[in-house]
Length: 190
Image (cartoon, rainbow, N blue to C red):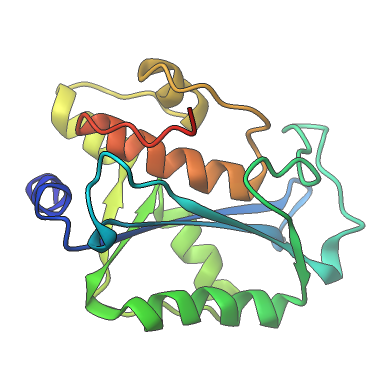
């Protein structure tokens, strides 16, 4: 996968789609937020490419707030305006993103297997042959050691400024930035 990611960045022929899921800390069956960040390298030079972020809040669970074990940043999306949709609408939005991009999509996550599991749980089944790039796994491959276990630590490792982690939209956006930083590309807003 590392070679494919590097080649895709160099060839500018793929679309990296980061997805992050936030769940209610007292009941992990309640998906409260979905973040999606799309970095379309088919549009031109990676030097100028910036992710496009989305933050989907699940209408049915907006009353559930984290804060006991993890920060609640559900109202602090940094890269646009949050969208409030039903759980079914959220699942359909995510499925549609992957369907529209098709075989040029690479799913990006930090320990992304959990996010895929939650997406399947809510009915957003992704293609079986979907290519996946996990920033945690790629760190371990590239450095031969245990990597930063959290996204926040990975961002520090690459000197990426971040605000309001544990907002699914922000986390997805920062995950794409971390992936690009691993390969020497800067997608920051500066």
